[in-house]
Image (cartoon, rainbow, N blue to C red; front, side, top):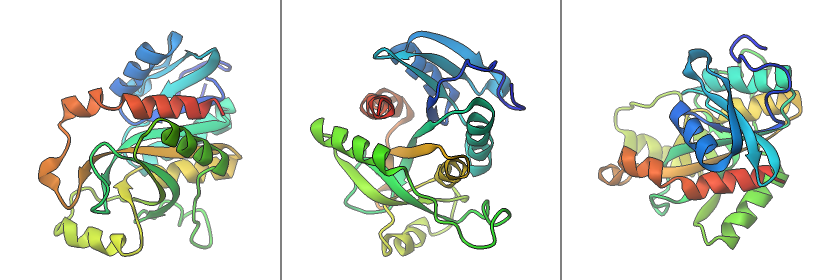
Length: 235
């Protein structure tokens, strides 16, 4: 048992799916896992362990923001020996060509966060595990899903004045999408020798904010990326 996770040793699988929202974790466990048991509820950060296609898998929520993700990713790796962490999240597209419902597979992470500046004497560039990335992209192509692979932005600021102009600066350098946790996930995985991947479902395009996906549709429309994450975890 760690400070923020109440699961007993052995109750969390080596492969973990990491949505931010505890209700999304509950949905994944109840819909896709066989014999799912809740193993964590501290701070309502629900975690479950069950089986998916005969393989033991856990799903656990991480909350919002890089500091929260860093706590859970660290404790999962350090205290529970987790070897495969796949973040399942939503994001805003920075490139105009990326549409609502498209999937972004994060190859690497740029960031406005200073979360690594306290631990390292330089600027660390965290990357995805290539094997997981390759498998996820291959599965997406087989299933006819619109998926993009590239650099993403972990942004500490959600509410920004002149958001479109701000985003265009990142667009020029090829950033695909903006979210808030990826840098912490990839950093913790690198430190503890785990494999990590971030899969993002686009729910808003910053060029067309009036076309954002409503919450109800967002939740019901995530099944394709949930299945993609779970099948990638079987790698």
